[in-house]
Amino acid sequence: MLHQFQFSVVRLHHRRVHERVAPVPPMKHHHRRVRCIQQGLPASHRAEDASRYTARSSFTADQDTTSSTNGAALSASSPSVYSFGSLNVEEAYDLERNEWGTTSLSVVVVGASGDLAKKKIFPALFALFYEGLLPAEFHIFGFARSKMTDAEFRDVIASTLSCRISARDKCQEKQEDFLRRCFYSPGQYDKADSFQELNRRMSEVETASGKQRANRMFFLSIPPNVFIAAAGGAADFCSTRTGWTRVIVEKPFGRDSASSAALGRGLAAHLREEQIYRIDHYLGKELIENLTVLRFSNLVFEPLWSRQYIRNVQIVFSENFGTEGRGGYFDQYGIIRDVIQNHLLQILALFAMEPPVSLAAEDIRNEKVKVLRSMRTVQLEDTVLGQYRSRHHGGRTLPGYLDDATVPPGSLTPTFAASAMFINNARWDGVPFLLKAGKALHTRRAEIRVQFRHVPGNLYKHKFGPDLDSATNELVIRIQPKEAIYLKVNNKVPGLGLRLDTTRLDLQYQSAFSQKELPDAYERLLLDVVNGDKRLFIRYDELEAAWDLFTPLLHEIESRKVAPELYPYGSRGPVGAHYLAAKYGVRWGDLANEDPEE
Image (cartoon, rainbow, N blue to C red; front, side):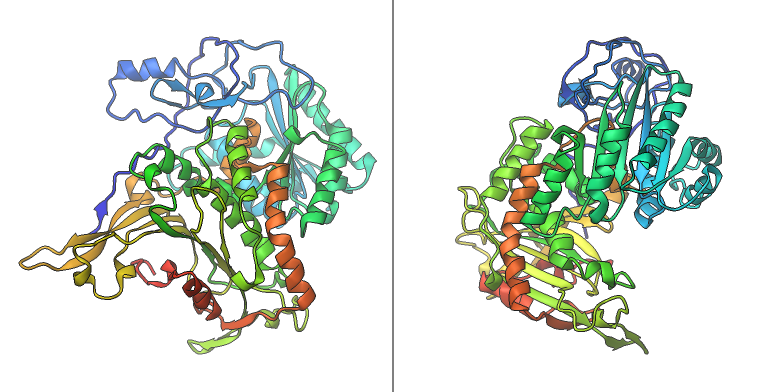
């Protein structure tokens, strides 16, 4: 029987504030969606808490303009704000306030006709709009090479929108209101006149809103070869003169250290670092957001977070499908560049960092950079490469990677990789961090597995037999799907005699928090950009340190034309991954079939 493990997790609930809020002096503190748990409180307490709500925060230093309305009263249409007990969000994080009573927000999706925009960005913006987290004067501008009218653009967006199961109230009405705020401006990514026309349309709509200031946010949902041209056009011809301008850049951030540095220089020619938001959507996952809360707000974990008690850490990413027609794009990068060098390495840095001075963005990112700079460069002998092949299963043939018509014949691009990495500092010296990612595997999952050391002088080791690894404690943080945190512990089986078994202290998010759907990562990250919160975005020196770890390995693989080990579609990956783990006395925890949903 699974037992509910009571972790100290900040439960996320929200509500709108329908009353005007008293003016408060501006503060330089950081926001975060820390929501107040008010169930069971008397009505008088709830009313008192509501009076503490103030406008969501944001850096205003992105432009050399400042608001002359700091401290102005907020209207009922201001975005929802959250507090935790009596702690105001501005007191928890180092952000300044947006004055949405006198400011409009324009979101420009560059590459608005692409898959990412339709599948992720527009639905995320609508979810934020539905929840009341965007200002009253909020508008979307699509910019792409495709020719479309405003009406056609709205039809494209309408086909992507839906309301959460738990939020069906006035869904159709909200969608219609959202679509009325959408406009389209066709153009070329490298043409100045295209961006000048976009700026004209934006200014026209912003002026009609009657607001004194206009903030602008650009999402570059485009191929990397036009990043710099589009960022330059947005910065040089579409920057607001009365508020802030921010630009979101989606990965890939280059192919190696040199190309990443070139991209950084190109962006820096048009934008300041504080205006650039390098997005890694995996950092917006609910369980990644909770990682620092779990560690730093629970006394039971932080003392154990070191080489003294932790034997190894595994960060696993697996998909149960292949490239499915997208092999041409994937083949340019491979699994190391696509997943390990960014998603998994970012998770590792967040997991292993020292306690930051505060929750401010720069304090957290400083600690992540220290971790990356303390790590050994990844070696080829500590890396296993694989590529999935076709397989006959259930009366049908599952295609191999090379069967994808978009993949070049004879490609050696790995679809699977596993690496052992090490951090050379006092906390983690000698602890292997095993990173593994692959396509067309037996299951879809992403998780962090922390395997603890054996109990010294274990009085019950004779009850577990010679395999003590099966009896060690393990903390599992399942990022997706079915988000959960559970701890494997040893217990006596009820009854006469003494029989021991391993059970789980289990926190299942869906059941514990009564939420059928969690916010998408893009919702969290887009709202962070609106509020100027850069904790979950990648700083330039952080990106540079990450590439320095993998660039020598990538160049060696390509120069030596290392052939990946083949593994069947739907299998557990190449056999070499097991030898890599065994080399460091580790057994992959995700292969144990312990999850009842598998």
